[in-house]
Length: 99
Image 1 (spheres, rainbow, N blue to C red):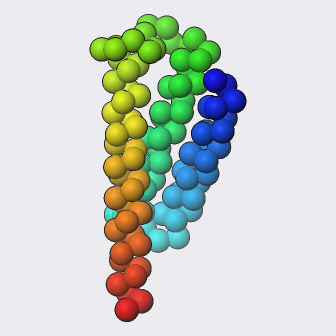
Image 2: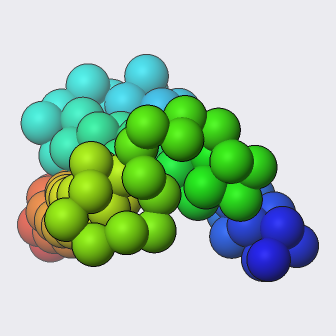
């Protein structure tokens, strides 16, 4: 399981770095949404690392209706939505500007 976390964690951190660089280059709402979405995806990776290592046992990792479950779920939902939406509208803005 730890190898899978590394295999998923590296691209997620790369997304975060890329979105931060994009935001530093062009400060727009769409690039900001990408940064927030990538940050939420990093939280998902960190919650799974904490679950695998047994950190913060009071969060009751892996149990339904626990704080850890909801943190993981909502971070994933927000991360995928915000990053995808920010990337889509950022790309559409650049496509429209080139036309």
